[in-house]
Amino acid sequence: MDLHLRDQHILITGGSKGIGLACAEAFLQEGARVTLVSRDAGNLARARERLAAHGAHRIHTHAADLRDANAAQAALDAAEAAMGAVDVLVNSAGAAKRTPAPELTPQAWQDAMQAKYFSYIHMIDPTIKRMAQRGRGNIVNVVGNGGKVASPIHLPGGAANAALMLASAGLAAAYGPQGIRVNAINPGATRTERLQEGLSADARAQGIGTDEAMQRAVARIPLGRMAEPEEIARAVLFLASDAASYVTGVCMTMDGAASPIVV
Image (cartoon, rainbow, N blue to C red; front, side, top):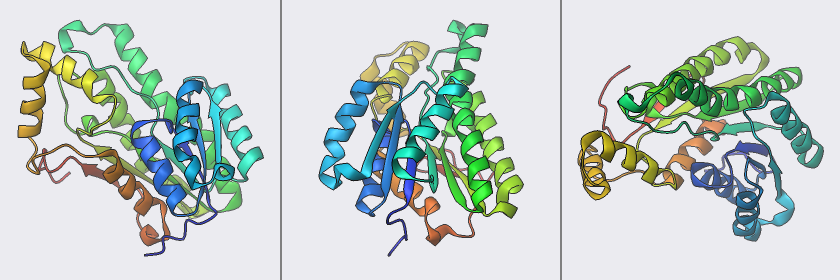
Protein backbone atom coordinates (compact mmCIF):
# COMPACT_ATOMS: atom_id res chain seq x y z
CA MET A 1 0.00 0.00 0.00
CA ASP A 2 1.31 3.44 -0.94
CA LEU A 3 1.02 5.59 2.17
CA HIS A 4 1.74 8.78 0.17
CA LEU A 5 4.54 9.82 2.51
CA ARG A 6 7.21 10.26 -0.15
CA ASP A 7 8.97 13.63 0.08
CA GLN A 8 6.99 14.66 3.14
CA HIS A 9 8.96 16.26 5.97
CA ILE A 10 8.58 14.35 9.24
CA LEU A 11 9.86 15.95 12.45
CA ILE A 12 10.46 13.30 15.12
CA THR A 13 11.23 14.28 18.70
CA GLY A 14 13.11 11.61 20.62
CA GLY A 15 14.22 10.38 17.21
CA SER A 16 17.70 9.23 18.18
CA LYS A 17 16.74 5.92 19.80
CA GLY A 18 13.92 3.58 20.74
CA ILE A 19 10.50 4.07 19.18
CA GLY A 20 11.49 7.44 17.70
CA LEU A 21 14.43 5.93 15.84
CA ALA A 22 12.27 3.06 14.59
CA CYS A 23 9.80 5.65 13.30
CA ALA A 24 12.58 7.54 11.52
CA GLU A 25 13.72 4.40 9.73
CA ALA A 26 10.18 3.50 8.72
CA PHE A 27 9.46 6.96 7.30
CA LEU A 28 12.75 6.97 5.39
CA GLN A 29 11.83 3.61 3.86
CA GLU A 30 8.64 5.29 2.61
CA GLY A 31 10.71 7.99 0.87
CA ALA A 32 10.09 10.77 3.40
CA ARG A 33 12.56 13.34 4.71
CA VAL A 34 13.13 13.33 8.46
CA THR A 35 14.35 15.70 11.13
CA LEU A 36 15.46 14.04 14.35
CA VAL A 37 15.42 16.07 17.55
CA SER A 38 17.04 14.85 20.75
CA ARG A 39 18.85 16.32 23.74
CA ASP A 40 21.95 14.19 23.17
CA ALA A 41 24.14 15.17 20.20
CA GLY A 42 26.06 11.90 20.49
CA ASN A 43 22.89 9.83 20.18
CA LEU A 44 21.86 11.91 17.18
CA ALA A 45 25.20 11.28 15.49
CA ARG A 46 24.85 7.53 16.03
CA ALA A 47 21.28 7.59 14.74
CA ARG A 48 22.32 9.49 11.63
CA GLU A 49 25.07 6.95 10.96
CA ARG A 50 22.63 4.08 11.34
CA LEU A 51 20.08 5.70 9.01
CA ALA A 52 22.54 7.01 6.40
CA ALA A 53 21.99 4.06 4.09
CA HIS A 54 18.48 5.41 3.42
CA GLY A 55 19.96 8.67 2.10
CA ALA A 56 21.94 11.06 4.28
CA HIS A 57 20.58 14.02 2.31
CA ARG A 58 17.10 13.19 3.60
CA ILE A 59 18.14 13.35 7.27
CA HIS A 60 18.49 16.47 9.42
CA THR A 61 19.36 16.40 13.12
CA HIS A 62 19.06 19.02 15.83
CA ALA A 63 20.03 18.80 19.49
CA ALA A 64 17.57 20.51 21.85
CA ASP A 65 16.16 20.16 25.34
CA LEU A 66 12.44 20.38 24.67
CA ARG A 67 11.66 21.17 28.29
CA ASP A 68 12.62 24.69 27.16
CA ALA A 69 9.96 26.26 24.93
CA ASN A 70 12.52 28.52 23.24
CA ALA A 71 14.68 25.50 22.40
CA ALA A 72 11.68 23.78 20.85
CA GLN A 73 10.92 26.85 18.74
CA ALA A 74 14.56 26.99 17.59
CA ALA A 75 14.46 23.29 16.69
CA LEU A 76 11.36 23.82 14.54
CA ASP A 77 12.90 26.86 12.84
CA ALA A 78 16.09 24.91 12.06
CA ALA A 79 14.14 21.91 10.78
CA GLU A 80 12.05 23.98 8.39
CA ALA A 81 15.07 25.96 7.21
CA ALA A 82 16.84 22.70 6.36
CA MET A 83 13.99 20.54 5.06
CA GLY A 84 10.99 22.77 4.40
CA ALA A 85 7.62 22.94 6.12
CA VAL A 86 6.87 20.14 8.55
CA ASP A 87 4.11 17.88 7.22
CA VAL A 88 4.04 15.43 10.14
CA LEU A 89 5.12 15.86 13.74
CA VAL A 90 5.81 12.67 15.69
CA ASN A 91 6.43 13.19 19.39
CA SER A 92 8.37 10.41 21.07
CA ALA A 93 10.66 12.44 23.32
CA GLY A 94 10.69 12.83 27.06
CA ALA A 95 10.65 10.08 29.61
CA ALA A 96 9.37 10.48 33.13
CA LYS A 97 11.45 8.45 35.57
CA ARG A 98 9.71 5.37 36.92
CA THR A 99 9.65 5.52 40.71
CA PRO A 100 7.81 3.38 43.29
CA ALA A 101 5.13 5.43 45.07
CA PRO A 102 6.86 5.51 48.50
CA GLU A 103 9.91 7.14 46.89
CA LEU A 104 7.97 10.00 45.27
CA THR A 105 8.39 13.66 46.16
CA PRO A 106 6.60 16.79 44.90
CA GLN A 107 9.68 17.48 42.76
CA ALA A 108 9.32 14.08 41.11
CA TRP A 109 5.80 15.02 39.97
CA GLN A 110 7.04 18.34 38.60
CA ASP A 111 9.96 16.69 36.83
CA ALA A 112 7.62 14.20 35.17
CA MET A 113 5.41 16.95 33.75
CA GLN A 114 8.43 18.81 32.42
CA ALA A 115 10.03 15.68 30.96
CA LYS A 116 6.96 14.28 29.25
CA TYR A 117 4.03 16.71 29.05
CA PHE A 118 5.78 19.99 28.40
CA SER A 119 8.43 18.51 26.11
CA TYR A 120 5.53 17.51 23.83
CA ILE A 121 3.49 20.68 24.25
CA HIS A 122 6.48 22.94 23.59
CA MET A 123 6.91 21.33 20.16
CA ILE A 124 3.23 20.90 19.37
CA ASP A 125 2.27 24.52 20.00
CA PRO A 126 4.39 26.30 17.37
CA THR A 127 4.14 23.42 14.90
CA ILE A 128 0.35 23.10 14.91
CA LYS A 129 -0.05 26.86 14.51
CA ARG A 130 2.13 26.82 11.39
CA MET A 131 0.23 23.81 10.09
CA ALA A 132 -3.01 25.73 10.61
CA GLN A 133 -1.71 28.61 8.53
CA ARG A 134 -0.98 26.16 5.70
CA GLY A 135 -4.30 24.35 6.11
CA ARG A 136 -2.81 20.88 6.52
CA GLY A 137 -0.75 18.79 8.89
CA ASN A 138 -0.62 15.69 11.01
CA ILE A 139 0.53 15.04 14.56
CA VAL A 140 1.08 11.64 16.18
CA ASN A 141 1.91 11.59 19.88
CA VAL A 142 3.55 8.44 21.22
CA VAL A 143 2.28 8.68 24.78
CA GLY A 144 2.07 5.53 26.89
CA ASN A 145 -0.53 3.28 28.44
CA GLY A 146 0.31 4.58 31.91
CA GLY A 147 -2.11 7.39 31.13
CA LYS A 148 -5.01 4.93 31.01
CA VAL A 149 -4.01 2.35 33.61
CA ALA A 150 -2.38 3.68 36.78
CA SER A 151 0.84 1.94 37.77
CA PRO A 152 2.25 2.30 41.30
CA ILE A 153 5.74 2.70 39.84
CA HIS A 154 4.77 5.25 37.19
CA LEU A 155 2.26 7.65 38.76
CA PRO A 156 3.84 11.02 37.79
CA GLY A 157 4.60 9.80 34.29
CA GLY A 158 1.13 8.31 33.99
CA ALA A 159 -0.41 11.62 35.04
CA ALA A 160 1.61 13.38 32.32
CA ASN A 161 0.48 10.76 29.81
CA ALA A 162 -3.16 11.25 30.76
CA ALA A 163 -2.78 14.99 30.25
CA LEU A 164 -1.27 14.36 26.81
CA MET A 165 -4.14 12.10 25.85
CA LEU A 166 -6.62 14.84 26.67
CA ALA A 167 -4.50 17.44 24.84
CA SER A 168 -4.33 15.20 21.77
CA ALA A 169 -8.10 14.70 21.62
CA GLY A 170 -8.78 18.38 22.33
CA LEU A 171 -6.35 19.66 19.72
CA ALA A 172 -7.84 17.29 17.15
CA ALA A 173 -11.23 18.94 17.72
CA ALA A 174 -9.84 22.47 17.83
CA TYR A 175 -7.72 22.19 14.67
CA GLY A 176 -9.79 19.79 12.58
CA PRO A 177 -11.39 22.72 10.70
CA GLN A 178 -7.87 23.78 9.63
CA GLY A 179 -7.20 20.38 8.05
CA ILE A 180 -5.07 18.98 10.85
CA ARG A 181 -5.34 15.53 12.38
CA VAL A 182 -3.99 14.72 15.86
CA ASN A 183 -3.78 11.20 17.27
CA ALA A 184 -2.04 9.40 20.10
CA ILE A 185 -0.61 5.92 20.50
CA ASN A 186 -0.30 4.36 23.94
CA PRO A 187 2.32 1.60 23.88
CA GLY A 188 2.52 -0.87 26.70
CA ALA A 189 5.79 -2.61 27.54
CA THR A 190 8.13 -2.17 24.57
CA ARG A 191 11.65 -3.52 24.11
CA THR A 192 13.59 -0.25 24.15
CA GLU A 193 16.55 1.10 26.09
CA ARG A 194 14.17 2.41 28.77
CA LEU A 195 12.80 -1.03 29.57
CA GLN A 196 15.47 -1.80 32.19
CA GLU A 197 14.61 1.32 34.21
CA GLY A 198 11.00 0.26 34.47
CA LEU A 199 11.91 -3.30 35.39
CA SER A 200 14.26 -2.08 38.10
CA ALA A 201 11.56 0.12 39.63
CA ASP A 202 9.04 -2.70 39.42
CA ALA A 203 11.50 -5.09 41.06
CA ARG A 204 12.11 -2.67 43.96
CA ALA A 205 8.40 -2.18 44.49
CA GLN A 206 7.77 -5.93 44.61
CA GLY A 207 10.97 -6.95 46.41
CA ILE A 208 12.09 -9.26 43.60
CA GLY A 209 14.93 -9.43 41.07
CA THR A 210 14.77 -7.81 37.64
CA ASP A 211 14.71 -11.19 35.86
CA GLU A 212 11.63 -12.20 37.79
CA ALA A 213 10.10 -8.77 37.16
CA MET A 214 10.59 -9.35 33.43
CA GLN A 215 8.98 -12.79 33.61
CA ARG A 216 5.98 -11.41 35.48
CA ALA A 217 5.62 -8.50 33.06
CA VAL A 218 5.56 -10.80 30.05
CA ALA A 219 3.16 -13.19 31.79
CA ARG A 220 0.62 -10.34 32.07
CA ILE A 221 0.55 -9.86 28.28
CA PRO A 222 -1.92 -12.15 26.45
CA LEU A 223 0.22 -12.07 23.29
CA GLY A 224 3.03 -13.55 25.35
CA ARG A 225 5.68 -10.97 24.52
CA MET A 226 6.50 -7.28 24.65
CA ALA A 227 6.20 -5.04 21.62
CA GLU A 228 9.13 -4.28 19.36
CA PRO A 229 9.76 -0.60 18.52
CA GLU A 230 9.21 -1.35 14.84
CA GLU A 231 5.66 -2.52 15.58
CA ILE A 232 4.81 0.78 17.24
CA ALA A 233 6.43 2.61 14.32
CA ARG A 234 4.16 0.88 11.81
CA ALA A 235 1.11 2.16 13.66
CA VAL A 236 2.60 5.67 13.69
CA LEU A 237 3.08 5.46 9.92
CA PHE A 238 -0.53 4.45 9.41
CA LEU A 239 -1.87 7.33 11.50
CA ALA A 240 0.44 9.77 9.72
CA SER A 241 -0.65 8.60 6.28
CA ASP A 242 -3.55 9.19 3.93
CA ALA A 243 -4.72 5.66 4.77
CA ALA A 244 -5.93 7.16 8.07
CA SER A 245 -7.42 10.28 6.49
CA TYR A 246 -10.57 10.18 8.66
CA VAL A 247 -8.88 9.09 11.88
CA THR A 248 -8.36 11.93 14.34
CA GLY A 249 -8.72 12.47 18.08
CA VAL A 250 -7.95 8.80 18.69
CA CYS A 251 -5.87 7.43 21.58
CA MET A 252 -4.90 3.94 20.41
CA THR A 253 -3.67 1.39 22.93
CA MET A 254 -0.92 -1.06 21.91
CA ASP A 255 -0.33 -3.26 24.93
CA GLY A 256 -0.97 -6.75 23.61
CA ALA A 257 -4.40 -6.78 25.36
CA ALA A 258 -2.72 -6.58 28.78
CA SER A 259 -5.49 -4.15 29.81
CA PRO A 260 -8.65 -5.41 28.04
CA ILE A 261 -10.82 -2.33 28.62
CA VAL A 262 -13.14 -0.50 26.24
CA VAL A 263 -12.50 3.15 27.12
